[in-house]
Amino acid sequence: MSSSIPAINIGESPDYHDLILRDRIHGSLYTSPAVYRDELERIFYGGWVYVGHESEIPEKGNFVRRTIGEEPVLLVRDKKGEPLVLKNRCAHRGNLVCSEHRGKAKNFMCPYHGWVYGLDGSLLDVPYPKGFTQEREDFGLQVLPLVESYRGFVFASFNAEAGSLSDHLGNATNALDRAVEMSPSGDLRLTAGWVKQKFAANWKMLPENDTDGYHVNYVHASFAKVIPSQYDEATMVSEDDLKSQTIDWGKGHTELNFAPSYTDECQWLGLPDASRFPDYVKQLEEAYGYERAHEILRAGPPHTLIFPNLFLGEMNIAMIQPAGPNECVQWHTPLLLGDVSDALNERILRQSEAAMGPSAFLLADDAVIAERQQMALAGGQAWLDVSRGEEREEPREDGSIIGHVSDETTNRGFWRHYQNVMSR
Amino acid sequence: MQLVSNDEQRQIEAFLYREARLADESRYEAWEALVDDDMYYWVPAGDDDQDVEGGLRVSVTADNRQRLATRIAQLKTGMRHSQLPVSPMRRVLSNIEIEPVEEPVKSSAREYRVGANFVLYELRAQSTHKLEVWPGRVEYLLRVGSDGELKMYFKKVMLVHGSEPLSTLGFII
Image (spheres, rainbow over the protein chains, first blue to last red):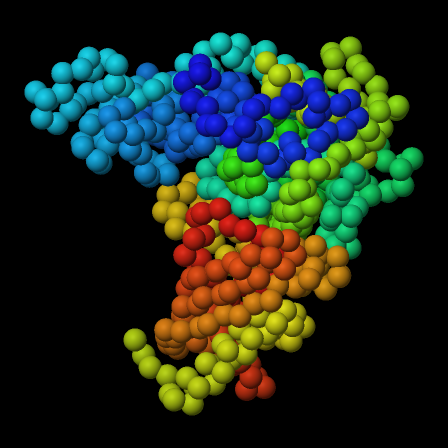
């Protein structure tokens, strides 16, 4: 299917075995237009990507606009109530069919010449039909061949041969499960809108940084100094006292696991214990039983990157959108929970604003550091070391690898999978 | 719209220009001295018109007084990379409209609702060294304190491009 994306002639594909070694990677991976073109083709159009959440399209006819790689798409709930992903480009002259960010539609009409498409992408109407003699079945909006939800998270692929979603997710389903289980009813509500943050940096710096536990003391030193937080014990004590972990789940999915450093409940919510939200505690106990509920309350939500573009950022959901080799956009929204008190969801929202986005206590600094890295790599001559902790990481039976929270186990996991995908 | 006197207008405009200059020059302590105890500093995420369940809507910035104090404390640590060095900035305020608040939050005080357009030019001196343009409308709520001085207890910055991808906004806008 990737052959349907015409290659732009910007140089030969490099050999990714030359650029990605076991313990180091080449800087041109962040800057080269040829690498970027290959990524669009092999990762964003050739594999599975995250598109949206079912709570964003609760009713038949609801849609949201998204971008996969650089292709505009619509995530739609069709007449049967199933999520569907359509290319948002008219089959006639290639115009953007829908320019609203979200909404509810019975059909989609291209504003250029009035072609009308059904929610399933089929071509319903062509104005002045006598002059158009082609087969209409050949002129629908392209429907992405693979669309599948995992517990409300909708993934899709342009490539019919991309394999199963469960194969793509592998061990990462457990992170999605943990996110869902933060909600007593299992309902998540991605309904608070999105903030979009622009990075003058390559998109891969985001997934890498999202599960890099080593930068926290430095990039976020100013945050640590003014706000006591759950990250103090989780990432900022001495090397031997750190209990958090890096996890390479395989298939490019990586995690910072803070749970081992949490001694009390709701520390992940920036609270000393769960006493502020007794109703939530009760709801979780009723839903999952006492023991599991209190484990959820202690361990908190996942901090997990799902390759290539979904970040389960504790009580945030973030989407990573590439925009050329030297720019990307991160979208984020708070992970609001269904059927809990407004006070709890408001706490989640305010925590989200503190951490994520262009002015936040954390992400503002991450962005500038990423941009400086992009500047430093512009010459394309660097090698980057990702060897940290190779000697002390431990493989587990499920294929995952556990490292010290300061170790580059996650970076290596990302790049190992990237190399596999890019060498196909 | 009820008008204010020429004296009030001059005093309010002087306050706005001072607030703008102190923000432009990253003089955080002097800027914070213009802020009252019930301050809310808000940068919404754009023109989103979706009906929202429970009214919970994610903002770029939504600081109550305490969080604003934390924001300023963070800027003053000398380790806030997104403002190291601080962005050279200049903003222009115009189209200023002032009206008295009929039912003031603090009933004994005189309060004003003020709107203005602004354009802010920022040099992203921390990383890209590109010039960033931040245009928008700003809404203030001001009150005259017991000492006769104006203070600000609400500032809402409505960016023209708030719904689009935004560059790092580490400064006080």
